[in-house]
Structures are given as C-alpha cells and as structure tokens.
Image (tube, rainbow, N blue to C red; front, side, top):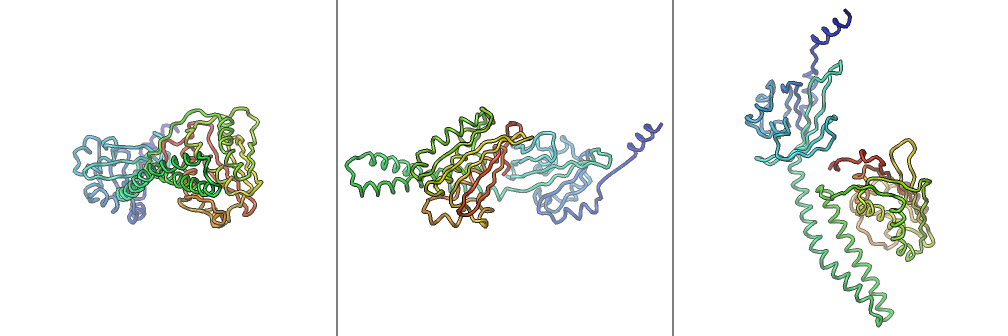
Length: 383
C-alpha cells in the first residue's frame, strides 16, 4: 500500500524550475540560453539567443519542437542548434551520454560557428525535467583567429624554405678545412643564429596548427624508459657544449607504458631538457626522473636542473606565448618564448598537466603527468 501510494505521488508530482528567477539570471548573459522540458517545449529564450538566431522569443517560447517540425521552422540555425543532427558539421568535445554535453556546430546560410553546452535539469526526485542549452557564438572570434593564423602560416612557410637553404649552405661551408680561426668563429655564430631562426619558424607553424586544431596526433603504445634514455642521448652533444652533466633516475619498474604520440611528446620533453641545459651553470647537472603515482593511473616525469631558476613573479606567466623570464636575458641564450607554451599544449593533449617549482639562482624542476590509462586521454583538445 505504501509503495503504491508513493508511486501515485510521484506521478502527480509536477516540478519545474522557478521561471521568474531563471529568466532574471539568464537575461543579461552574453551567451544565448534556451531552456526546454523533456518534451522539447521551450520555456526560456534570452536576448542573446534572439540575436544569435535572429528570432524573437515570442516565436519560440511555449512552442514544442520535434525533429520533423524543426526541419520546417523558419530559423534553420535554431533548429540545428536544438537538433544538432540537422547541422552540416558537428564536433563532439565530450563523451556521449555524459553531461554537460559539449559540441561545436558549424552552420550554413548564414555561416555561424557555435559552441553549445547542454546541461540536464533534474527534479527533486532525480528525474529528468528538461535541458538548458548555453550557446556561444564564436563566428567572429574564429574568423579573426583564422586570419591571424593564415598570416603567420604563410609568412612562416615563406621564411622556412630560404632559412633551411641557409642552414644547409652554412653546414657545407663548415666542412671547409681551409677556413681561418677567425672565420670559423664567425661561422659558428652564423650557424647558431640560422638554427635559432629555423627553430622559431617551426615553433610558429606548430602553434598555429595547435590553435586551428590541426596539430595532428597519432597515439600508440610507448615504453618510457627507452624513450627518455634516447632523448637524453640525443641531448648529450649540446650538454657537453654547455659543460652540463645529464642523469636519468630510473624507476623500479623496468618497463613503463603509456599511450602517446612519440614525435609530439618527444618535442615537448626535448624543449624542457634543452632549457634545463642552456639555462644552467658550468659543471651543472640535469636530472630526469620517472615514477608511477600511487593510487592513480598516472606517471610523473620530472626535469630538474641546477641553473639560474625563475623569479617567483614570472612563474605564473611561464607557459604563455612569447614570454621569457627577466633573469635569463643576461645569459645571451636566444629563444622565441614559444617552447613552454607548445610543451604545455602537447602534454594537455596527452591528458596530463605540467607545473614548475623554482628557486632563483638555485635551479628549477618541471613536473608533468601522463595517464597510463588511454581512456583518460581527451578526445580532442578543447580550444
């Protein structure tokens, strides 16, 4: 008897959000907001949504949408936002069946680039009442980003070909045994300058691809002990030039596997090792560490140096584009300020995070994590 009565109460129980409060909250938002119940009956449609979809709230509120009716609705963009399956291009940024649902929708006639976040609304009994869609119009933002990226890409590609040829010519000239000691010194400076220029151009191209979502990744099983040993071996030549010793602190496990893009991850770690060497002191050292994190499906890699360190005031800006710490300029090491920004993005795409601890004039240690469970790798980086 009790259970039957309880079921009857649940059937009769009609729940809905406080419409007055909800309207007050969403009215002034810059993002468009659409609220509808589980039957797709729209109850709220704010001013920003009116502007995005060029449709008055009076034409939408109180109306029940269905996939069939949506196709004939005068605002195709609104129909495609409510039913993304109607849109020409949809990119999912979240796992299916989980909330909030995040998608990016490209619309035609008119052209619009929207990011739509759908939240599920539940009543006091945990039953689904409806949904709230928050829509951000990114059309202008992405147009400006593409214009900037196109300019940088074209300029970088135009510069890369002659710079590569210049490097080749200088390398060939370096093989001439008849050069005087003075000429060899000047040639060494020219080769290093040309190499730095080429590295900067390549960094610009890579970052442009990241911002456009075109920095392709191919994840495969990777054994980290061998991988890190090879990276240290590759860095040994430059370490000897700077009179810095390299060490690898091996974990207890002989083999540690992750899912990674070998080339991209190698670029990220090589950036950290390169910085640890160049901003070190004569007879300094760089220690690479690898360990499994307890009770977590993660490993942590560390790159520790005995170098110049980073001022406390600069640490918060360290992973932003074109930033270089104030205290390193005196060392005369050329750099674009792009390496750590690139490194952070690559690690994030692998499902990890990066942080740094540093004491000025004592050295720095960069720590970053990588998941050992491939399910923790994001589907795609969210811009």
